[in-house]
Length: 303
Image 1 (cartoon, helix red, strand yellow):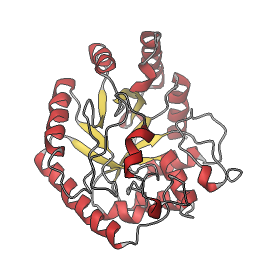
Image 2 (tube, rainbow, N blue to C red; image 1 turned 180 degrees about the horizontal axis):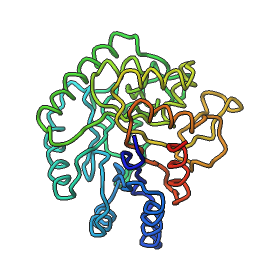
Image 3 (tube, rainbow, N blue to C red; image 1 turned 90 degrees about the horizontal axis):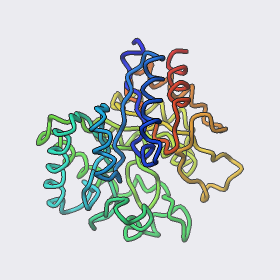
């Protein structure tokens, strides 16, 4: 592959400040200097005004669904009837924005509707109603234990597999991918063995998987290899995490730090391994990203 084969994106959350026109121009100029394709992924709590700004400036976009909707898409629930109109709304929005690919969170160990993040509510507020202590890493912790061998999990995993296959059948014009989730509040999209079982394109999030591997006693790069060998990884949410063994496991959080943040993840190895397995779409899901992150990522891909 050449550098032109890769799509390197920033998150739309970077463009919530008064200097966003200058920042967008700096990203675009750096991309020209590096000879790479640059775009922006609309974050799943994005607002209409920022979407309009990016579209008005003819920025190539991808999606992180659901956009501008009330609920996340829990394809593991008993009743998913409310999801289909929301998917249709997103597809219509995508057509207006020339979006052809989108990732989504799609697997919660719950039958209740899961409110969409943002739009007045935090991640914790949206997810708290779905907390189940019997699935927690420790009493009182919102982090998950490994419940992936339970009968309920396996039942819901089969339900997700069936429902996301139906998603692709109903809306084939979008390249969908289900995201490896942050291991908290009983979210079920975690380990490679289960995500590969879905036989569906995957979005692999570095900060999420880094925490998953700590909580579930997996070696990060070995788990990455299992994902990649499954042949389903199509998109990467790339960011650094500050967490290491000096932190108790129950205190590990997400990442979303700039790529030059000191860490022990060995992100260059991760990026090169993904590229060697044919992954071409990298989203820098970093909320204070700069063109320096774009240059660093490009350098890792070239090396």
